[in-house]
Image (cartoon, rainbow, N blue to C red; front, side, top):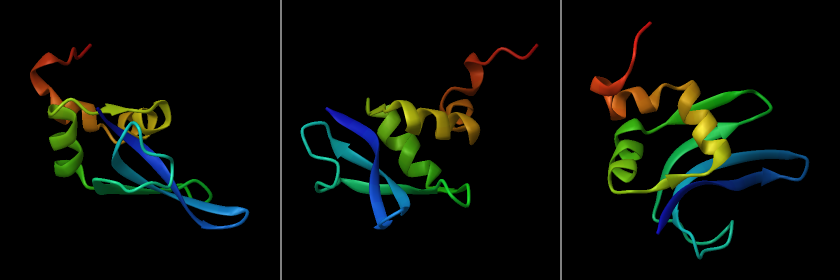
Length: 88
């Protein structure tokens, strides 16, 4: 099973994260299938490769809680299923 997960990079006390598609049995810094984004919590910057993320989500990849929050803020799930969204 594939997950969209954060992979820690950067130096001590100055972490930045890559958003990667990775096998669930791999460790946090293990070999990833593909890098699909970047997240810097200190500067609050996010870069997402939306077509790659949508590809993995359509194939059944499960995002972790933190990655799911990042994707919600970027409205990626609206692009995944635009005809199933309620607009009030």
